[in-house]
Every structure is written in C-alpha cells, then in structure tokens.
Image (cartoon, rainbow, N blue to C red; front, side, top):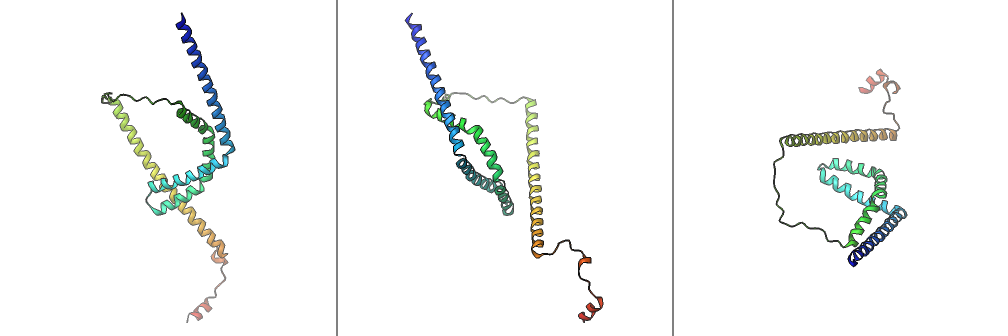
Length: 199
C-alpha cells in the first residue's frame, strides 16, 4: 500500500513543480513585455538597421540593373517609416512569447529527440489527380511570377514618369517660366523687323 502513496507524492510534487515553472515563465513573459515597451526606441532602431541591411541585400540579390536597383533602394528608404510601424506592432504581438519560449527551451535541458537512422522511406507515386493538381499549381505559380514581373515593370515605369515629371516641374519653377506658356502670351514679333534683321 505504500507504493500508491509514493506515486501520488511524486505526482503532486511534479504538478507543483510544473505549476511553479509556468508561473515563473509567465513572469519572464511579463518582464520581456515590460522591457520591450520601455525600450521601444531601441527596438525601432534595431528594426531600422535590420531593414536597411535586408532591403539592400534583397534588392542586390534579385535585380541586376543599376537603374532599377537605384530606384528600388530609394523606394526602400521612403517606405522605412511604414515598415517601422508594422514591425513594432508585430514585435509587440509576437516577440515576447517567442523570446520566452526560446529561453524556456534553453533552461529546460531537454535533449532533442533524434529518430534512428533506420527509418526506411518508401517512395510512392502520387495518385493521378494529385499530379494534375501539381501541374495546375505549378502553372499558377508560373503565371503569378509573370504577373509580379509585369507589375514590377509597370511600377518602375510609373515611378520613372512620376520622377521625370517632378524634375520637369521643379526646373520650370526654378526658371520662373510656366511650362504651359502659350504662343499668345509671348511678346509679338514684327515680321518686317525680323526680315530686316535677317539680312
């Protein structure tokens, strides 16, 4: 009869330790959330640096043309404030729990389960309807990629036209002449004087 009592004591001890562990990890979560709110400026600065590095590396990796890279880097710089807002919201919502879970894994000292190498993998052919579904999905992916390329080209064209029109408008404002000045507004030219000056 002493055996069930011993198991019961072990179980209650285990449950008490688990409850204490959960309470401590909840406190860690609250402290990380508090730290994130207190250090909001630091977190945003970290995101700024990561965004700069990531956007430049992504643009350099995906595009070859220097002109396209230059325009996209300019767009990336202009979109940084919007990224900062969304990144901060994502950080507040997700990072404290992610950091807490990672820290818990570090202190739990549980060995990862490694499956034995004797697992035999059987290769089975997918059913016929799965093949047609795979074909459909690969065609869809190809179509979507072409659409992305087309939209990227259109975006670059629109940005180029918009930039050129801004430059044209700024030049006309600097010179003080209206770009829409009509012929009627130009000073009249006497035809006889023009003929005399030509000779």
